[in-house]
Image 1: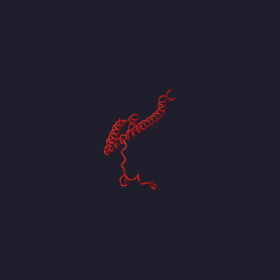
Image 2: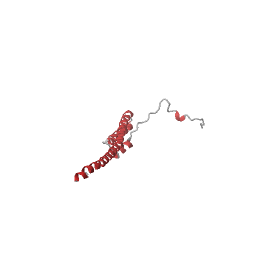
Image 3: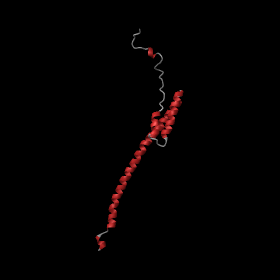
Length: 125
């Protein structure tokens, strides 16, 4: 029985100079989320198509094509997420500033119209 420490029999097949490249991520879950919940200009569906292509290429063993499709899927997912988060925030900000501006205009115009329509006591005499 071999009791030498550290055990080196599990390291025989690999060398530190040849790291195993990690397969590219396909971002499929993110694409499905963007497609179902936050579909901004159909970018989530486009990202889903590229994610499926990346998964197919990775399964076929074409790592470089899988990496390109994965990069495109990540880009479309980021655009869909950013658009779906920023667009409602921008619309809410516009609505709030519009309401504030209209309230200020209404407040200012009430004083103007009461002055014009009320008249003065010197005109009645």
